[in-house]
Image 1 (cartoon, one colour):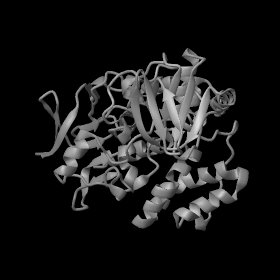
Image 2: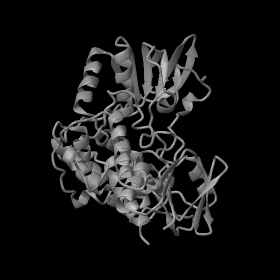
Image 3: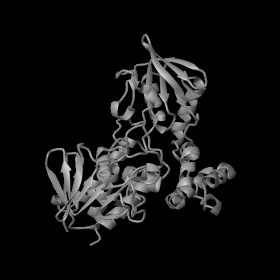
Length: 426
């Protein structure tokens, strides 16, 4: 067969390549990714060993067929939370392992960006920013997360170390002693711990409209609960069910998460809007849990006053001499030396290649305008007329509108295995 081009070399793209190498002895794979390191993306490129995964090792294998793969590689038990840096090394190991078993000429990494996809004589032509193009019978879009959400109140502020609009792209300095962080999810936890380790006397203000912090995992995960019918038919049903089970909410949510792609697909558009607009922040505070040891550190820092949580929005930010003045929606005023944005990523697909493909009607947006449209059973992408492409597939966050839960390894490894099987169909 002719070649397969994978666009994007983060965890999603790497795992598709690994599955293809495992399942076929002949397919030619070209992975288009401008960065030298593969498998890292934003999530696993951190150099901070104290940035831990938010899922225990027993659930973070990259391989559907080998659920103990990560635990065996890291030599840890299933309840251990390893560092995200080490997880990036594990993903590289998976690729290196498969490449050592096969003809290395079957796989090439092109350090370039894909600008456009066109139909070609025998499939597709992928135009690169190098001025060249690569032919493919089939293509996979593994583009990772969209751009960060940057609130309006950042507009007009200067670009300097005091104003961090995208913490993962820009980085940050821990030199400031009074810091405001917008958003109080898992990224907030990572940044807080990095700052306090370098600057123990710092005071960090965490600001979010709901004031919710990530919930901790149990030390030992309990089995998921079966999902009752009332939790499958509406957003309110999910909320009511999780609110009714008391301390078993983790097990209940794990059960819903296992079936959530199916539940989401069955929701009408109106129900999808209700879930996203009214309950999604609450869902995420339960769903994106922290390692127990991280939770203990954060709670300790709150007790000592090193962390202060504000349940409020930000109305404005302005400079007053060398300080930043924040006006909060609850009427409070803050004076800090640095503001860091940790509001997460947009659900609308913002990658320039996606924009080009949607504008040309080659692809279409997904439900609620999020991500791109696909066939949920095969992950083949759809054009503006709703027709499924025979040779173009998606994986990961660009499918958020169709699948909702599609940003974490437990879902991505399943998608990678599915996409590889579909790609290898004759």
